[in-house]
Image (tube, rainbow, N blue to C red):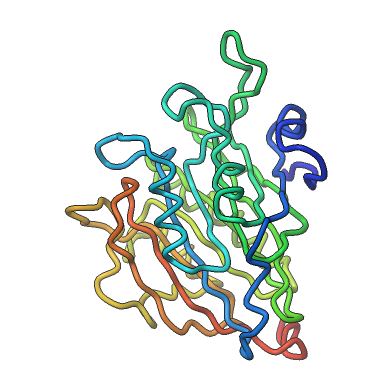
Length: 289
């Protein structure tokens, strides 16, 4: 199912009180895109921020912000993002805080949505966020199939336009405990991608390594950019002694991967994945779709 679309046109706090699980967007204070770039390139990031805490569970959202800023990316997909969730993140609306700190547009998608904590009025939410230099439109959150006793997961979806090319961006975080349901969850993502007419990028913590049965579903209609252009082993979990590549940039066939890296930053319990992508010319966008 898809939650209704909302755009933030007033104060973030006012929208957060009514948005429930729907995404919201906010205008940036700077960085409206790389207008001087003669090519249609897009740099994207997938980053599980572990509610702003590092692998030792030390909370430092400013450190997360500095790392994101260092990537010089156009679109950043964040997983494990708190919105007034609790004391572990000091009840901060993390996506709004990061967007304001970095001067970016954002969409927030709550997969968990609970009543306010005692003595507070904000709903407690946990989910994913998309940050962008470019304006975000058509923000939606699609809930994914869930197994018995599992944490509800979703896929956030939004559209950016890069020099006339509309690009659909999806951000997801699949279950970490059930391989069968990871496959079922990503089958829904593939259905959403197949319904698109835009070039599409899927970013996220997919909790399964290359060679797994789930990875076959991840790459059924999308391209895993890392084997094509990745620098190094691409391992993302966990910092300090990474053993697995579970964070991904996946792209539809209209998009050409140019470069991918895993920056060795330590603000979370995951390393991020950064990829530079070449977009098609506007007249090529809908061919073959």
